[in-house]
Amino acid sequence: MPPTTLQAESTLTDRYQTTVPDPIRRVLKLKKRDRIRYVVRADGTVSVERAGVDHERADPVVGAFLSFLARDMEHHPEQLRVLDSSLRARIAALIGPADVDINEALTPDDE
Image (tube, rainbow, N blue to C red; front, side, top):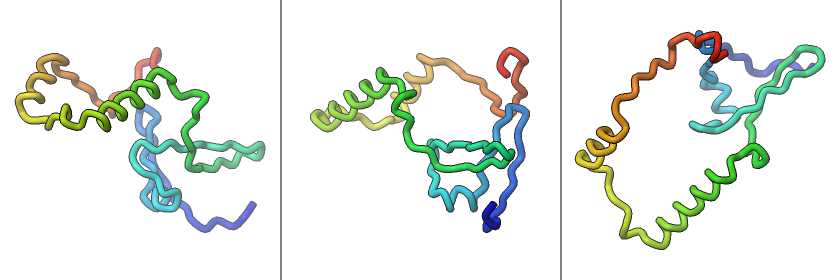
């Protein structure tokens, strides 16, 4: 096993989530929404690496829709609107309140 050049620790929440420590994010050049891959070796060691987009597992419908949106914005920029307070209020009225506590423990069914 090569010598350790960087170590960092983080804590698991009740939902088994953790924050990737800043030094690790910088080394791996991670940005928000990037994917990471955990590799567990036979000897029990684990490595974390930056993962690329898994095209096999990506939802083709979502990808096609995002491509459609990108083309539409490119061809019709005049249709883009600022998210002003009245549009925000309309969206809020349509979706209603969403009370989410990311620190709440998972139920046994969710585990």
